[in-house]
Amino acid sequence: MSLKIGLVLSGGGARGAYQLGVMFAIYKHGFYRHVQALSGASIGSLMCLAFLDGDLIKTYNLWKKISPELVLAAKDNYRSRVPFKGRGIFSNYAIKQLITDNYDLERLVNTKKPLYFATSQIKRKIIKKEYEAKYFLVNYKSEIEIIQYLLASSAIPYIFDRVNIEYESYTDALKSDSEPISPLLQYNIDCIFVIPLTSAHSVERFKALKMPIIDFMSERLITSPIINMIDFDSRKIDEYISLGYCIGDTLLKEAVNRNFFSRKKTTQYLSLKSAGITIDVDRKLTLKEIIEDSNYKRRHI
Image (cartoon, rainbow, N blue to C red; front, side, top):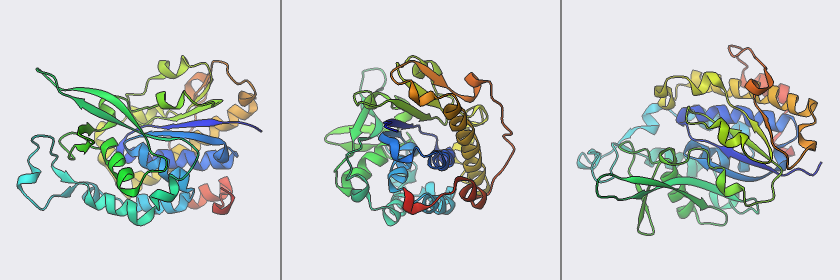
């Protein structure tokens, strides 16, 4: 099957583990190799790198290492904690170190598959700040540049420091475009997979595109309290991964049954809601069960 898929991963903090669950489902149904362009925002940017790395078990173990204390680490200098002039309260050093210790970033972006990180460029106005979406093409960049773009994409105002790149200031993508589909539309792709994590998800935006769209939205996830975006409890992580896998598996089965991918360049939209499908959202699978059900084997990616 000659199929080119664009993958859009939104921001959403701890909910990003849900995207890992969907990735296992993408693997199960044989679509992993067909993803030919990727775009991420905030935690979705990191998950794009995890997708390219292909070792989903390693990424799972990485998620299990993340804790609120690691993500929201205190800064050493008291003065630097004051949220003033673009500064945030917490340090991102520990999470940055965790990423560089686990991923060979330059190797991952050494690919012909376009990879974009979305962020928000700060535009200074007389009365208030405005934010404009900025999409950085990450392919063939250095580790220093990749980390810069990654931190800019997830620089939540007042939580983390804004990031300066080439004399411009950037902050979290959620301020402008948390579902960065725009940069992928210039490429010859046949279908979009979007994995949203927050209530900012725009269903109508994706429905309007003249190509098949599979929307892996979980109503339960995007309507849950916003505070759980920073709840990196290990039990929650397992729940998100299980939910992502169950929804991903269900939707991709439905897509195959409908011959969804045989009708390229047509306006089609598939989600649980549009298909009238309900699933048992309380069903919880362990990682072992997901691996066995998906027949996941790292060397096959």
